[in-house]
Each structure stands twice: as C-alpha cells, then as structure tokens.
Image (cartoon, rainbow, N blue to C red; front, side, top):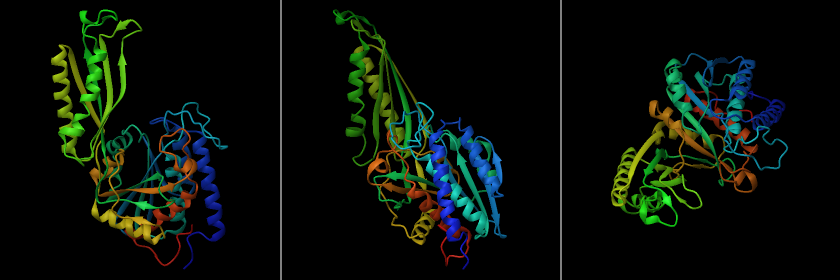
Length: 395
C-alpha cells in the first residue's frame, strides 16, 4: 500500500504541527473571542482544499467516495483566564490568559488528521471537522448546535478527545454510558442585619449564617444521597459586605454541583433548597437560591465506544474500554445528547508539565501526542467510513 503521507512528509507534518501548537499556545484566546485561532484553522483547512464554513466556530467538510455516512470529529479552541508560570519558549503573550487545558493540542491534532485524510482520501463518506469555541464555560457546543452544525451537515456520529495528565502518554480510555459529570452553578444570597462587631446580638450577621450553610451543604453528599452516587457539592466563593469592625448584613455563596445523572442533579438542587430554607428560617434571615446547569452529563453510546476501542488498538495504543467516570464536565455532552457519540481521554504523560493537573498555571500539552492523536483520528475514520486498514496512516 502507498502510505497516505510518505516518511519525509510525515516528519514535515509533525514539525509543522508542533510549530502550529506552539503558535496557538503563544496567542491564547478566551471563549467566543477565538478570532485569531479561528482564522488560523480556517486558513489551514482551505489550503488543503477542504470546504470551510465559519460561524461561531469553524467547520471543515471533507468528502471521499460515494458513501452517505457522515462522521463529526470535534476539537475545542478556547483558553483560560490564568496567568502562565511555565518556563518554555512559547509562553503565552496574552497576559492573564493561557492554554492550561490543552485545547491548543486538541485543535492541532485534528488539523493534522485533516491533512492526512485530505491527502489520502482513504475513506468512503464525509468527515466533518468541528472546531468549537468556548468549551470552558459550557456554551460553545450549544451555540454551534443552535447554528445548525449537526443538522446542516447531517452528522450521524460525533467524537471528541481530551488529554489526561497523569495517564501514560497516548493511553486511550473511555466507557459506555456516563463519562463526564454535569455542572450546575449555584448562587445563594443571604440578607440579614449587619451591625457593629462588638454587638453581634443586636442584628443577625450573615457571615455566621453563610458559614453554617457551607458545612450543612456537605450533608447532601454525606447523608442525603447514596454512597457512590458521585455527586460533589463545592462552595467556591464567599462574598460579604463586612469590614474589620462591621458585621455583614449581606452574604453571597457561589459554587457548583457535579452529578452523574439528571436524577441526582435534580435531587441535589432540591436538597440544597431545603437546607437553605431551613437555616434561613432558624436565623430569621432571607435567603434565595439560583441554579443554572450549562454542562449536562456526557453520555457515550455503545456503538461509537466500540469504534473508539477498535481504532485505538489499530493505532497501536493502550486502550482502557471501561474507565471510571470523570468528575469534571465537558460540553461535548450537548453533541452526544443530540447524536450518538463517544468522548475519550488520551494520556498526556505522568511527569513534569505534562503530568500537571488540567488548569494548572504550569501545565503544558505534550507535543508527543500530536502524532498519536492524529493517527487515532485517522484510524477512527477508517473504522467508521471504510478505507484501507492494511497500512500506517502516515504518522
């Protein structure tokens, strides 16, 4: 078989992909502000002769043969509002913004796969490359769906990759069913009576009420839901109008709830309301609860999971087909709720910056994954849309 890309072309592609990844890392952009990133992606795809559609994100459409099946491959593009503390020579030049989650790598891997598939044409059907904005706030996938990405291109199945620090380089892990938790943001506002710090009995200071709520909310997980439910309730902000000698009359608690099922999510919200109402009544203050779910539970379909397992093995990678569910959230969930799909994790490495937690200020995507991820994407398209499986995908 003639390889889709010969050895010299493979080396050149890897070098160019590293350069692109480093360029994206130097110029990170926050959600719905990915203008430079989108322009880079669109130009790369057009240079390959791939049909390009620009909207809130970038969509590339590549057809080969006469097959009618359409497979969507998704990569996220946005960065985070974090000041980078790395020491490599491609640090962020955008103060207070960095690619601390590896979306620069996800984007580059999919661009590499697009080039291999465009050059080889080794499939029968249509590949839709989905470059999504604003994954971090859970708004980008839904925005693309509302824009019509799934219906307009008649996507039959959709797949997404996220790197996983701490796992061996290139290890593929996924599961059938729920793989990522939902995230529900909550805001609790408490209104009491502030006053002088020397006379707390005169009013009802809300810092005491808020402190009681922080502890009481943990009984949702510890006592109100079954052990092993996987629900997490975290208070992440405690805001008051108090001063050094002024007891606060107003306090706001903010945080999030992670859940593995819609039923547990709704139960946790209900218990939170009960607890807040009870504590507020005890202290004779006013308290309100507002909840908003932007990330729903990510659910993998059996067929696509089977395809991911086969593709991982065909690419020569270590595959874990039934990993435990993750507690973090992913807005890929909106795609896989609309059409059958599979979200998978790809090991980023166990040491150094590659093993740092996601969202750490010194995290870095592993360049060794660029060729691994591209090879996996190509094998997945061969599995879903046919193609010659007897040779290397060219990386």
